[in-house]
Length: 250
Length: 347
Image (cartoon, each protein chain N blue to C red):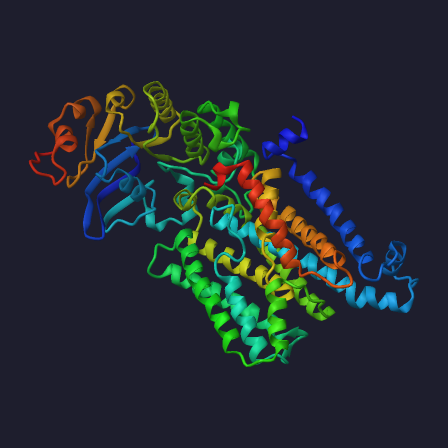
């Protein structure tokens, strides 16, 4: 299977603080990967690098075999979508208006929608079960409903790669289960999904494969269940913040 | 859903709201043409505008040399401030931002003060030196604020807002310093005061033509920016991943907003609240999509200032109140009303 998204020895530092240490990753079409790691390990940074919102200090990111930096902004936005952790919209946009905005990379300067755009929007609303509240105002929805709309937002962009930053955050366990299940099903639509998730108790149920990002370590990947039981994961989450007592990665 | 519920849900039909405004604005303009210290019959106005000279010569002169350019100027000021308000509120993702928020009013104040105290007699293409210098002051200040926000900060909307506030505060102080050191006669101080209070001048036709052209260009460019402005509402991070060039878009919004503000300022001095109230009310009526808001803000802004000008010219006739002062009396209570109605939005 040819890789849709490929990270080759990607390194990134915020000023003097090195965050990503030689990350290697390859994702095929329709593959869903959970990105695990403790707070501050660089999950959001890695997603932003993959989305082309940050430039790596070294290494290469390939999208469909092409270096990310060789693509125009809009070309990149047509292939890769990133839904941020927080989406605070200060004005009273309805769910429909919010999801329509996701078609921006596919529309002209004025954002006029074509039939293709409308079909993509309807499909995104349908797959995320959000069509029922399309006319409600986004910021007036419950946390779980808002997370589903965020998912619809990513899907409506019709990307080949969907990057999700903690899509199930601040939800109770019932909502977490329903949302992660929805994400796993979306991969069957042919979208490659890389989702930063904190719900270690649920991840194996919905993501067969995962990657672990531990502070100061290279990215390591494998079967989710094995990764969850590994010493590397234990060290990543329970070791001292300074990184004392590291063991080898998987 | 009845009209009240639709308004509560910000879902009044944008086309209908715009159409109502498009009908009401000309009616307000006609009413304004008729009212004043010297009343002019409406039938006479209609026939004069149709090219038939039915009014006596004095009324003809009042209509075409005084009242019509003055009222068109008020409409242009209102439209420019309404659209500029929409642009700045969208840019700063803040319903309380207004055209003067990033220091442009202070810049124009310094410009006007320099002109009033040092070049009071100079004119340029029919414009008083104060109008020209106010324009330059506003444009230079916005350029400076933008450069400061881009260098040494993250260039975000908040940096712009803070840089604008800091520069604006300094420039306001500078303007008052100029006033303090001025050895000018009371004429200069009176001109400065009229400018500060938002007294709308009656422009010469060529001058009005230039400002109308500025408004036309500003509104057209704003229209091209509306969809991107919608994307900016979702935050810089999300807008960037949609492929929106953030810095270029912000710079374009600021330049267009400055052009519109300067157009308004050069005709009427400082008239606050229009850029705040109009986009705010339109957003409450029809939702936040800037593509629908643009025509409504232009028409609504024009109507608000035309109506305010009617009151300004008739309340204490034959004297006139400055429209800027009238707007302050209208704007203050309006925001107190909003604060009581929806405090959570302004927390």
